[in-house]
Image: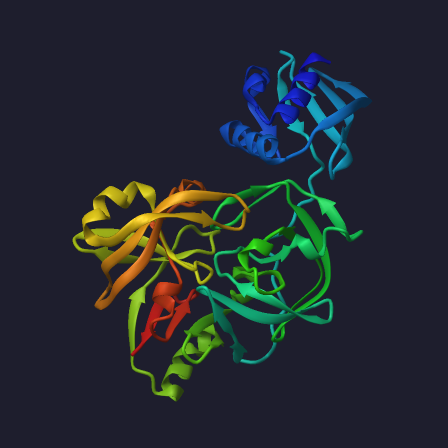
Amino acid sequence: MEIVNIAVDAVNNHSVENLHEHLAPDFVCAGKSGPSAIQVLAQIITQIDEHISNINKIDERQADATLTLVYDFNYSKRLGHKEATFIFNSDNQIKQMDLLPVKKVDMKKDFETPSDDVITVPMEISDGLIFVKAELNGIERDFILDSGAPSLYLNSKYFSHSNDTVNSISAQGVSSGISGLDVFRVNTFNFHGIRAENTDFVMSDISHLSKDREIYGLIGYQVLKDYDWLFDYEGKTLTLIKSDKTENYIEEMRYKTYEVPMQMTSEKSHIPFIETKIGDITLMMGIDCGAAANLIDDSMFSKLEKRMSNISTTELKGASKESTTVKKGDIKSLNIGKKRFKHLPTVFSDISHLNAHWTNKIDGLLGYEILSRQKLIMSINNKKLIFIE
């Protein structure tokens, strides 16, 4: 069929331009509909990095005004033979197109937690990132702690040749959108008593995040969500405290504290945010322990330029291997309530792909440069950022 051939050409040319006129107004792709589906399709086609060398029709079904065609697509690089499904409406427009079979991964899956009210986790700091150890399938491995990651996220470098991989299509992280992902069935995962068994997790090659050690993945929000998080960069420990025990813990440790209210970007989100001020400019900033540098949306650069020093450009690279040239500089002063932070290295980049998924929009992310300067507790469930003075 001609339209199927146009889809093949789109993959091979990494462009959806010639497909647009053939898509129905209610077009569906990878579980998304309408304009979002077209964006997902564009992501898949432009980033799949494959070439379809041959196609064969393996099924054709007519039901009422709907025609369904199933093809075998032979990808010439790593994917091999994959089924592609096309569903057409009565106007011969594509109502649904799935170029690759999709395996759904539950990013909200709960992890089993131990009975301990307090868990102390040793951590290492390098280049602004937090490195911790966890057991994966019974073997202790290195991971990056990244509260901006939705769940446990694996490095496909160490799993891509396993028989347990199943092709998937897309997932969204804090730093960037990534497509062409796989999932891996983990037999056992144990992070200081926080466990999961026989569970599928998303993976891609994130080896570039650390060149000095073998990183098996990111430990994200879903692993930590039942606890408040006390970061002590000087003592090199992360203390996980059951949310209803935090006040008692603070009293027992005789900490003097200063609290700032936190909000969440949406009910389904894992990103907390707070109000900050740079001079007379108010910014809503998310907090992400996986952010090695502070990040502000590039639309704010012109407004903040006079409040910065050491302005230049740099290459920004996230969970995707692709890098982008962005502006950077040192924010001279930033206030969180009565707390003032000076000389904050900050990069400026487009974060619209993050805000597109959230009810409450943010202007950027705070990470290492804030978290490392004093002990503090991120109390997600109690919606408070607690500075320990």
